[in-house]
Length: 504
Figure 1 (spheres, rainbow, N blue to C red):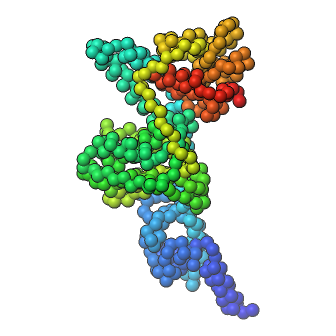
Figure 2 (spheres, helix red, strand yellow):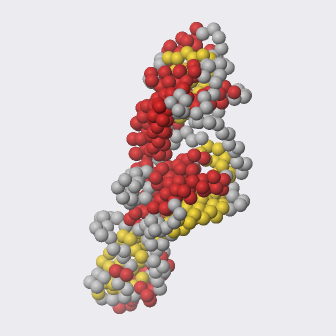
Figure 3 (cartoon, helix red, strand yellow):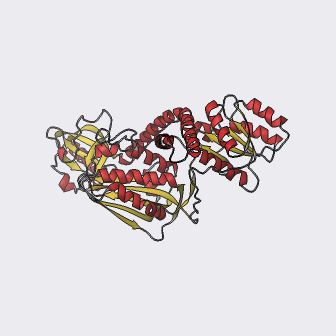
């Protein structure tokens, strides 16, 4: 075959391979940074025709990066519709029509990049969560003592007493410190949630009066609530915290006033959505969206939105924990969230929680300062001396007979030597040498009818990893007040049916 014919045949094969290849490709003039040719796959990815590509400057496609892309990392490209995609590009020198050129093979890695970003974000959250969880136990013990004794003093004083106001302020400060601890722990590894079946419409409506006071008169709050909204299983207090944080952020984005909308609806997240989001299962969800028409956010801000302690607010106006808290609560509740924002147009944060087919739970209310009384016998095991004394004093004042110790071995001896009925064991989850769960399992062999109440300031190591996160197990999270303690004690003692053994 003549050389000319061989060359023509080679060019036809190259042209066929180039045009029909499923991978997007360009032929680039390196001297003028122009696209000389593009294949059909590139036209499909970028939304330009092949004729539009010919002669197009690379600057029309590339998104400028201030410091330039790191070696080997994807470049950012702009499609014909304005969408930004991440692209990896392999380039090879070729001869094109007798002139030197580059063949660029393109790969859209936007989806992979998003998953990598989500993984890095999750790892950041886990690191901060481990730090927060490490200090939680001791910190919550201290808060239990502060709040507990201040409430005992309040209960013993008349409102007109000069010391009443001082004790009340100590209690309020302890409650604020406890709320901050919960914020820190909300994005840590899993902790025990007080989940129940909720109607998010009722949660939003119940908060609306307080939210209107919070945002001020220059912001118009609109509620768009779907009447046939499905139910979710979540901690009502934490869902209220999610809404409060999102509303505060929306308000701060509209310093001159504006419109803030809270909307609920039923949605279905398909496999396409779950493929773009880590740990999201396809299925039926309930969506609550908080939207504003404020300043919006640029891409750089959105990329750091859920980092702990990151804030765009001025000094003294934000801790940077709000959206990190939202992230942690929503993830732990089995849901997901998306943020849509356009500079100068506004922001919408959409929270998705799994939908369940159960009726909403009926709320039981009691005074936070009411100490419930009783006369049963309690065995208390707590290695922190001050916490143990507080719990003992609270229960004795409420009429209970209490045997207490810091040593699990002494608890075994007390249980074995006591001739009467021990109605309840109250034990810390994490103690030196023997865990609360192990102690409860041992004592259950001596006293099959004894019920157990666990308490702890830990969130993950002390609870999840010890395997007591079951609905049948009674648990009291530190810090707690005397009212919360006595209410929980009565709840456990009066619960019907067989008490689940700690080791089951």
